[in-house]
Image (cartoon, rainbow, N blue to C red):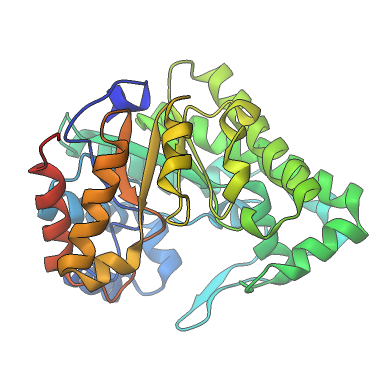
Amino acid sequence: MLDVLKGATVFPPPVWIMRQAGRYLPEYRETRKRAGSFLDLCYNPDLAVEVTLQPIRRFGFDASILFSDILVVPHALGRDLRFEEGRGPLMTPLEAEEIDGLNGDMFHVNLSPVYETVRRLRLELPAETTLLGFCGAPFTVASYMIAGHGTVDQAPARLFGYQHPEAMKRLLKILADWSARYLIRQIEAGADAVQIFDSWSGVLDERGFAEFCIEPVADIVRQVHAACPGVPVIAFPRGAGSRYTGFRKATGSDALALDWTVPLDQARKLQQEGPVQGNLDPQRLVAGGKALSDGVGTILAALGDGPLVFNLGHGITPQTPVSHVEQMLREVREARRG
Protein backbone atom coordinates (compact mmCIF):
# COMPACT_ATOMS: atom_id res chain seq x y z
CA MET A 1 0.00 0.00 0.00
CA LEU A 2 2.82 2.44 0.77
CA ASP A 3 4.23 1.84 -2.72
CA VAL A 4 0.87 2.84 -4.20
CA LEU A 5 0.60 5.93 -1.99
CA LYS A 6 3.99 6.95 -3.34
CA GLY A 7 2.85 6.57 -6.95
CA ALA A 8 3.40 2.92 -7.92
CA THR A 9 0.81 0.84 -9.76
CA VAL A 10 0.11 -2.52 -8.12
CA PHE A 11 -2.44 -5.01 -9.45
CA PRO A 12 -4.53 -6.31 -7.87
CA PRO A 13 -4.55 -3.11 -5.82
CA PRO A 14 -4.18 -3.00 -2.04
CA VAL A 15 -7.50 -2.81 -0.22
CA TRP A 16 -8.90 -1.57 3.07
CA ILE A 17 -12.26 -0.03 3.95
CA MET A 18 -13.19 3.00 5.99
CA ARG A 19 -14.73 2.10 9.38
CA GLN A 20 -13.45 -1.46 8.90
CA ALA A 21 -13.41 -1.86 12.70
CA GLY A 22 -17.07 -1.40 13.42
CA ARG A 23 -20.56 -2.59 14.18
CA TYR A 24 -20.91 -4.93 11.18
CA LEU A 25 -18.45 -7.26 12.97
CA PRO A 26 -19.86 -9.44 15.78
CA GLU A 27 -16.51 -9.40 17.58
CA TYR A 28 -16.56 -5.58 17.59
CA ARG A 29 -20.04 -5.53 19.10
CA GLU A 30 -18.88 -7.82 21.90
CA THR A 31 -15.84 -5.67 22.65
CA ARG A 32 -17.96 -2.51 22.52
CA LYS A 33 -20.20 -3.95 25.26
CA ARG A 34 -17.17 -4.53 27.48
CA ALA A 35 -15.90 -0.99 27.00
CA GLY A 36 -18.82 0.86 28.55
CA SER A 37 -18.98 4.07 26.54
CA PHE A 38 -17.70 4.71 23.03
CA LEU A 39 -15.15 7.19 24.38
CA ASP A 40 -13.94 4.61 26.87
CA LEU A 41 -13.33 2.31 23.93
CA CYS A 42 -11.34 5.02 22.11
CA TYR A 43 -9.23 5.83 25.18
CA ASN A 44 -8.56 2.27 26.36
CA PRO A 45 -5.43 1.05 24.50
CA ASP A 46 -6.16 -2.61 25.27
CA LEU A 47 -9.61 -2.43 23.72
CA ALA A 48 -8.72 0.02 20.95
CA VAL A 49 -5.90 -2.26 19.81
CA GLU A 50 -8.24 -5.24 19.93
CA VAL A 51 -10.95 -3.69 17.74
CA THR A 52 -8.37 -2.29 15.32
CA LEU A 53 -6.88 -5.77 14.86
CA GLN A 54 -10.21 -7.58 14.47
CA PRO A 55 -10.73 -6.84 10.75
CA ILE A 56 -7.06 -7.58 10.06
CA ARG A 57 -7.36 -11.01 11.63
CA ARG A 58 -10.61 -11.75 9.83
CA PHE A 59 -9.90 -10.30 6.37
CA GLY A 60 -6.18 -9.55 6.11
CA PHE A 61 -6.70 -6.02 4.80
CA ASP A 62 -3.58 -4.35 3.41
CA ALA A 63 -3.98 -1.43 5.82
CA SER A 64 -5.12 -1.04 9.38
CA ILE A 65 -6.51 2.29 10.57
CA LEU A 66 -6.29 3.43 14.17
CA PHE A 67 -9.58 3.04 16.01
CA SER A 68 -10.54 6.44 17.41
CA ASP A 69 -12.82 9.36 16.55
CA ILE A 70 -12.30 12.73 14.88
CA LEU A 71 -13.76 14.54 17.89
CA VAL A 72 -11.03 13.52 20.32
CA VAL A 73 -9.17 16.66 19.12
CA PRO A 74 -11.70 19.19 20.52
CA HIS A 75 -12.16 16.92 23.53
CA ALA A 76 -8.41 17.13 24.19
CA LEU A 77 -8.70 20.93 23.88
CA GLY A 78 -11.14 21.02 26.78
CA ARG A 79 -14.55 20.74 25.10
CA ASP A 80 -17.11 18.32 26.51
CA LEU A 81 -18.06 15.29 24.41
CA ARG A 82 -20.35 12.33 24.81
CA PHE A 83 -21.92 9.78 22.48
CA GLU A 84 -25.54 8.68 22.75
CA GLU A 85 -26.96 5.61 21.04
CA GLY A 86 -29.05 6.68 18.08
CA ARG A 87 -27.90 10.31 18.29
CA GLY A 88 -24.16 10.14 17.82
CA PRO A 89 -21.74 12.74 19.23
CA LEU A 90 -23.08 15.51 21.44
CA MET A 91 -21.19 18.62 22.59
CA THR A 92 -22.03 21.96 24.14
CA PRO A 93 -22.25 24.34 21.16
CA LEU A 94 -19.20 26.57 20.85
CA GLU A 95 -19.74 30.34 20.96
CA ALA A 96 -17.45 32.77 19.11
CA GLU A 97 -16.15 34.28 22.33
CA GLU A 98 -15.08 30.83 23.59
CA ILE A 99 -12.64 30.11 20.76
CA ASP A 100 -9.66 31.82 22.33
CA GLY A 101 -10.29 29.77 25.47
CA LEU A 102 -9.53 26.46 23.77
CA ASN A 103 -6.68 25.09 25.84
CA GLY A 104 -3.97 22.84 24.48
CA ASP A 105 -1.89 22.67 27.68
CA MET A 106 -2.95 19.06 28.29
CA PHE A 107 -3.56 18.13 24.66
CA HIS A 108 -0.92 15.41 24.27
CA VAL A 109 -1.47 14.17 27.83
CA ASN A 110 -5.17 13.78 27.09
CA LEU A 111 -4.40 11.90 23.89
CA SER A 112 -1.60 9.76 25.30
CA PRO A 113 -3.83 6.63 25.26
CA VAL A 114 -4.26 7.11 21.51
CA TYR A 115 -0.50 7.33 20.98
CA GLU A 116 -0.06 4.22 23.12
CA THR A 117 -2.60 2.42 20.92
CA VAL A 118 -0.60 3.34 17.81
CA ARG A 119 2.65 2.10 19.39
CA ARG A 120 1.10 -1.23 20.30
CA LEU A 121 -0.51 -1.64 16.91
CA ARG A 122 2.77 -1.18 15.10
CA LEU A 123 4.25 -3.95 17.24
CA GLU A 124 1.32 -6.33 16.80
CA LEU A 125 0.39 -5.80 13.16
CA PRO A 126 2.01 -7.90 10.44
CA ALA A 127 5.04 -6.09 9.04
CA GLU A 128 3.43 -5.88 5.59
CA THR A 129 0.27 -4.19 6.91
CA THR A 130 0.28 -0.41 6.57
CA LEU A 131 -0.78 1.41 9.74
CA LEU A 132 -2.85 4.51 9.10
CA GLY A 133 -3.35 7.35 11.53
CA PHE A 134 -6.01 9.97 10.96
CA CYS A 135 -7.73 13.15 12.03
CA GLY A 136 -10.80 15.09 11.04
CA ALA A 137 -10.34 18.13 8.84
CA PRO A 138 -10.84 21.45 10.66
CA PHE A 139 -14.15 22.34 9.00
CA THR A 140 -15.74 18.98 9.72
CA VAL A 141 -14.56 19.05 13.34
CA ALA A 142 -15.65 22.69 13.73
CA SER A 143 -19.11 21.87 12.38
CA TYR A 144 -19.76 19.50 15.29
CA MET A 145 -18.28 21.95 17.78
CA ILE A 146 -20.49 24.79 16.57
CA ALA A 147 -23.77 22.88 16.24
CA GLY A 148 -23.13 20.59 19.20
CA HIS A 149 -24.24 17.60 17.13
CA GLY A 150 -24.33 16.34 13.58
CA THR A 151 -26.71 18.03 11.14
CA VAL A 152 -27.80 17.22 7.60
CA ASP A 153 -26.16 20.17 5.85
CA GLN A 154 -24.05 21.73 8.64
CA ALA A 155 -26.08 24.95 8.36
CA PRO A 156 -24.99 26.16 11.85
CA ALA A 157 -21.31 26.01 10.91
CA ARG A 158 -21.89 27.68 7.54
CA LEU A 159 -23.90 30.45 9.16
CA PHE A 160 -21.25 30.89 11.86
CA GLY A 161 -18.58 31.27 9.17
CA TYR A 162 -20.58 33.97 7.39
CA GLN A 163 -21.55 35.88 10.54
CA HIS A 164 -18.21 35.52 12.35
CA PRO A 165 -15.58 35.18 9.60
CA GLU A 166 -12.61 36.15 11.77
CA ALA A 167 -13.72 33.87 14.59
CA MET A 168 -14.16 31.00 12.14
CA LYS A 169 -10.70 31.66 10.71
CA ARG A 170 -9.19 31.53 14.23
CA LEU A 171 -11.06 28.34 15.07
CA LEU A 172 -9.94 26.59 11.89
CA LYS A 173 -6.35 27.67 12.44
CA ILE A 174 -6.36 26.36 16.02
CA LEU A 175 -7.80 23.06 14.83
CA ALA A 176 -5.33 22.83 11.94
CA ASP A 177 -2.33 23.40 14.22
CA TRP A 178 -3.40 20.90 16.87
CA SER A 179 -4.53 18.36 14.28
CA ALA A 180 -1.12 18.55 12.60
CA ARG A 181 0.60 17.99 15.95
CA TYR A 182 -1.76 15.08 16.60
CA LEU A 183 -0.89 13.45 13.26
CA ILE A 184 2.82 14.01 13.79
CA ARG A 185 2.64 12.28 17.18
CA GLN A 186 0.79 9.36 15.56
CA ILE A 187 3.54 9.07 12.96
CA GLU A 188 6.21 9.23 15.64
CA ALA A 189 4.37 6.43 17.46
CA GLY A 190 4.42 4.20 14.37
CA ALA A 191 1.82 5.28 11.79
CA ASP A 192 3.07 4.75 8.22
CA ALA A 193 0.66 7.21 6.60
CA VAL A 194 -2.25 9.41 7.68
CA GLN A 195 -5.66 10.38 6.35
CA ILE A 196 -7.55 13.66 6.82
CA PHE A 197 -11.34 13.20 6.79
CA ASP A 198 -13.32 16.23 5.61
CA SER A 199 -16.68 14.51 5.73
CA TRP A 200 -18.69 17.72 5.31
CA SER A 201 -16.68 19.64 2.70
CA GLY A 202 -19.42 19.02 0.13
CA VAL A 203 -21.88 21.40 1.82
CA LEU A 204 -19.71 24.48 1.21
CA ASP A 205 -20.06 27.03 -1.56
CA GLU A 206 -17.10 27.89 -3.77
CA ARG A 207 -15.56 30.54 -1.54
CA GLY A 208 -16.34 28.60 1.61
CA PHE A 209 -14.67 25.51 0.15
CA ALA A 210 -11.51 27.51 -0.57
CA GLU A 211 -11.40 29.15 2.86
CA PHE A 212 -12.84 26.50 5.16
CA CYS A 213 -11.68 23.30 3.46
CA ILE A 214 -8.65 23.84 1.23
CA GLU A 215 -6.71 26.35 3.34
CA PRO A 216 -6.88 24.45 6.67
CA VAL A 217 -6.16 21.08 5.06
CA ALA A 218 -3.19 22.56 3.20
CA ASP A 219 -1.95 23.96 6.52
CA ILE A 220 -2.06 20.51 8.12
CA VAL A 221 -0.35 18.84 5.16
CA ARG A 222 2.45 21.44 5.15
CA GLN A 223 3.14 20.90 8.83
CA VAL A 224 3.07 17.10 8.58
CA HIS A 225 5.33 17.04 5.54
CA ALA A 226 7.78 19.43 7.20
CA ALA A 227 8.02 17.30 10.34
CA CYS A 228 7.75 13.88 8.68
CA PRO A 229 9.08 14.07 5.12
CA GLY A 230 8.19 11.10 2.98
CA VAL A 231 5.12 10.09 5.03
CA PRO A 232 2.09 10.05 2.70
CA VAL A 233 -1.00 12.11 3.54
CA ILE A 234 -4.36 11.02 2.11
CA ALA A 235 -7.05 13.72 1.88
CA PHE A 236 -10.76 12.86 1.73
CA PRO A 237 -12.93 15.90 0.85
CA ARG A 238 -16.20 13.97 0.69
CA GLY A 239 -18.77 15.49 -1.62
CA ALA A 240 -16.28 17.86 -3.26
CA GLY A 241 -17.55 16.95 -6.73
CA SER A 242 -15.85 18.99 -9.46
CA ARG A 243 -13.67 20.60 -6.78
CA TYR A 244 -11.68 17.38 -6.49
CA THR A 245 -9.91 18.73 -9.58
CA GLY A 246 -7.01 20.83 -8.32
CA PHE A 247 -7.51 19.76 -4.71
CA ARG A 248 -4.33 17.69 -4.56
CA LYS A 249 -2.17 20.55 -5.84
CA ALA A 250 -3.91 23.14 -3.66
CA THR A 251 -3.46 21.13 -0.46
CA GLY A 252 -0.22 19.29 -1.19
CA SER A 253 -1.82 15.97 -0.29
CA ASP A 254 -0.19 12.82 -1.65
CA ALA A 255 -3.33 10.81 -2.39
CA LEU A 256 -7.01 11.58 -2.88
CA ALA A 257 -9.77 9.47 -1.37
CA LEU A 258 -12.82 9.65 -3.64
CA ASP A 259 -16.44 9.35 -2.56
CA TRP A 260 -18.74 7.09 -4.57
CA THR A 261 -20.35 9.96 -6.52
CA VAL A 262 -17.10 10.81 -8.33
CA PRO A 263 -17.46 9.73 -11.99
CA LEU A 264 -14.79 7.27 -13.02
CA ASP A 265 -13.73 9.38 -16.01
CA GLN A 266 -13.02 12.20 -13.56
CA ALA A 267 -11.27 9.70 -11.26
CA ARG A 268 -9.03 8.62 -14.13
CA LYS A 269 -7.99 12.22 -14.72
CA LEU A 270 -7.30 12.68 -11.02
CA GLN A 271 -5.26 9.47 -11.06
CA GLN A 272 -3.00 10.90 -13.76
CA GLU A 273 -1.81 13.38 -11.12
CA GLY A 274 -1.20 10.76 -8.44
CA PRO A 275 -2.72 7.97 -6.33
CA VAL A 276 -6.45 7.74 -5.73
CA GLN A 277 -8.38 5.73 -3.16
CA GLY A 278 -11.94 4.49 -3.42
CA ASN A 279 -14.66 4.58 -4.45
CA LEU A 280 -17.19 1.75 -4.14
CA ASP A 281 -20.68 2.79 -3.02
CA PRO A 282 -21.14 1.32 0.50
CA GLN A 283 -24.69 0.33 -0.46
CA ARG A 284 -23.33 -2.00 -3.15
CA LEU A 285 -21.48 -3.74 -0.35
CA VAL A 286 -24.74 -4.04 1.58
CA ALA A 287 -26.49 -5.43 -1.50
CA GLY A 288 -23.83 -7.98 -2.42
CA GLY A 289 -24.22 -10.28 -5.40
CA LYS A 290 -24.25 -8.80 -8.89
CA ALA A 291 -24.54 -5.21 -7.68
CA LEU A 292 -21.32 -5.62 -5.73
CA SER A 293 -19.53 -7.50 -8.50
CA ASP A 294 -20.49 -4.82 -11.02
CA GLY A 295 -19.19 -2.06 -8.75
CA VAL A 296 -15.88 -3.80 -8.06
CA GLY A 297 -15.33 -4.72 -11.70
CA THR A 298 -16.11 -1.24 -13.01
CA ILE A 299 -13.67 0.44 -10.61
CA LEU A 300 -10.88 -2.02 -11.35
CA ALA A 301 -11.40 -1.67 -15.10
CA ALA A 302 -11.34 2.12 -14.90
CA LEU A 303 -8.58 2.66 -12.34
CA GLY A 304 -6.60 -0.58 -12.14
CA ASP A 305 -3.91 0.57 -14.57
CA GLY A 306 -2.80 3.38 -12.26
CA PRO A 307 -1.98 3.92 -8.58
CA LEU A 308 -5.14 2.78 -6.78
CA VAL A 309 -6.01 1.86 -3.21
CA PHE A 310 -9.32 0.02 -3.42
CA ASN A 311 -11.76 1.27 -0.78
CA LEU A 312 -15.31 2.36 -0.25
CA GLY A 313 -16.50 5.86 -1.08
CA HIS A 314 -17.38 6.32 2.60
CA GLY A 315 -17.54 4.15 5.71
CA ILE A 316 -18.99 0.65 5.80
CA THR A 317 -22.50 0.61 7.26
CA PRO A 318 -23.47 -1.50 10.30
CA GLN A 319 -25.99 -3.64 8.37
CA THR A 320 -23.37 -4.89 5.88
CA PRO A 321 -23.15 -8.72 5.90
CA VAL A 322 -19.67 -10.06 6.62
CA SER A 323 -20.06 -12.43 3.67
CA HIS A 324 -20.34 -9.45 1.33
CA VAL A 325 -17.01 -8.09 2.58
CA GLU A 326 -15.54 -11.50 1.86
CA GLN A 327 -17.03 -11.40 -1.64
CA MET A 328 -15.57 -7.96 -2.29
CA LEU A 329 -12.11 -8.99 -1.15
CA ARG A 330 -12.21 -12.19 -3.19
CA GLU A 331 -13.17 -10.32 -6.34
CA VAL A 332 -10.51 -7.64 -5.86
CA ARG A 333 -7.75 -10.08 -5.02
CA GLU A 334 -8.58 -12.54 -7.77
CA ALA A 335 -9.00 -9.87 -10.44
CA ARG A 336 -7.05 -10.16 -13.67
CA ARG A 337 -6.15 -7.34 -16.03
CA GLY A 338 -8.09 -7.10 -19.24
